[in-house]
Image (cartoon, rainbow, N blue to C red; front, side):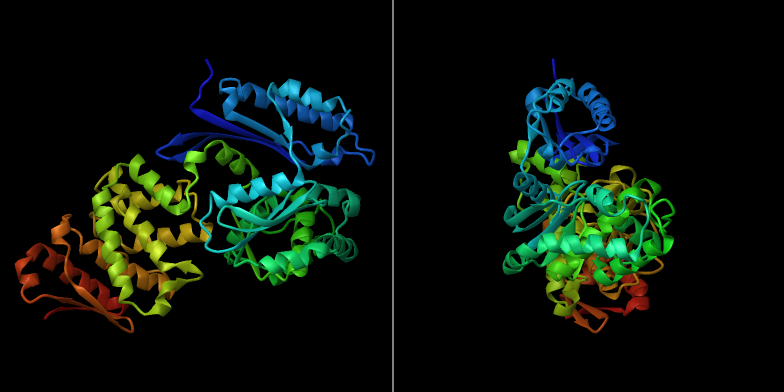
Length: 495
């Protein structure tokens, strides 16, 4: 009997074929298997709408693997779609029936608009962006550009340009020159231009990119220690680097993996064209895309307006975290943040309140393994855990904040330093006080200290005689005051 516990999404793209297999655990998705094969379907498409024999063979060989992998999954839990290149095939082409026969499962050839809408859903369900967002997905034969908010796409287009098709048109000899990159970018701008007014009319507050191009840019930025929000200036500097190498074969950009080299230059040209046409300021990579959109389309019960909260609640259930303690720490952290200057609340565009909520939920996750070095265990666990709703930058901030509260719940030493980024260091200090004030683990025993802030000096005001009556908490606070002397100071008062 086929299992109904697993779900599979199959995406027959123009450059690669992908399959994602998941199951639902504690109200969240757990990825069980990912299969990706570089089929290069668009590279075998002729001007007459036919596929050459090599591309057909690569595709059918890959589908035989997919078919074998999903034969134990209930058919109703499998969805398979074809995109731009399969849209371009003649309806009479027997290859489409060969694809369905080999896969052993119905295949839908989706329109460009449906592809764009599904991509937006995949990103909306796996990120936690506030406000309107612009989404770009650079595929092998098409590029989808969508503006929307929440789970609603407001304006979308699937444009007839992709990183494989532009290779064939502008870089067929493998050379990279100023002339052919300018020509490729000019074509991109020409295709986007009719839609610029509509995109700008709807507007966006943040821009996200989903595809191999954005993963490449993210890997390059990480390798070079650069920001993960990409600017046009940086993209144009990368373009000049590529031109300097002279050819795709010689391309050796620091941080770019060899497997991503063949279509990097065209993906970069498409993105630069989008930046110039739409007047974009920055863009960053995101995880979700078409496959995730297909999965969430089958699992309506997982559609949650607050993706981060869904992830936090799932981890709470999975690791049997103390929900009451989470609520105590979150309440006290919120109270302390209200006492902080408003300028402290923006951390490179991220919300201090949402980061504090995540730390409140996750600061004790390491206790699942062992009390000894629980803070270190927790950071390792989260560094290697899928966290839908958290961007790469948010994950980095979260890990730094968890390092900043080390040594309160376990026998780890207090951190020798705090994050170099001052707002994050300040938030770490506030969160330490919130965690510390809840160590009696009772609602009626939360420490009643009122926080005031003067520059970077903290003052906690307790009721008269409170510290004397609570020697355990007094010992924790006195130790904390000594530690915080290095970072602005903490004074304990009784009033």
